[in-house]
Image (cartoon, rainbow over all chains, first blue to last red; front, top):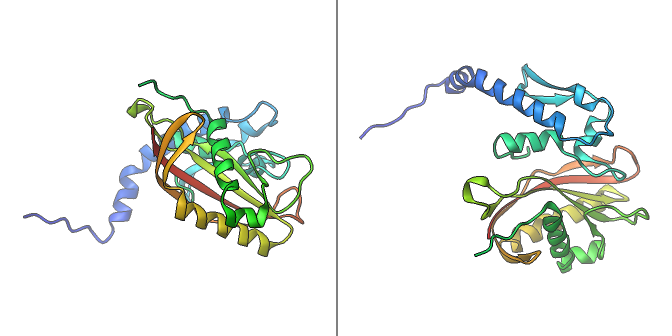
Length: 95
Length: 140
């Protein structure tokens, strides 16, 4: 019988080993997110970008209305461009 | 068997109708469960939007995993919290099972409500807004 004993720094090992692939997924997500919005969203698509910093690897948008475009408001339905892109890249679970 | 085609509108209409039929929720919001908020808004109210998910291609369209955004709007935070908590409770207690979505018989095998984000609406800061998500795993 064999047994797997994870290294104490397994999270760091996995982080390094998967970094480049996760960045590629984020780049595809950013492309998808730019296409997942209505044409009346101004410069939103230009403001979608990947990040790779102390938050990890991911996609965000710096547009002033990004939060409303993503989550909606009482006057706007949510368009969810980044969540739709995340779900298309793999099953997305909100945190 | 003919494969039923379910659209985002089918899912939203079904979930809105199912939520309206839950007496604990109806006691708080009456029939105000919408896929699109009306122009004349009365709170508290619930909005259901299908944000992602759909037929899983590898299964030939027989498995669906729709993801919804759930919003509760209210005049105060306590009401928003009560409505969202009630909504989450009825989903957890009763949504798993067999339903009719459009004309298709759909079995919901899993219904997971995500974390609840508490706050105020971005464009109307006097309106309390609690947001969450609902992921369903279903088969036709």
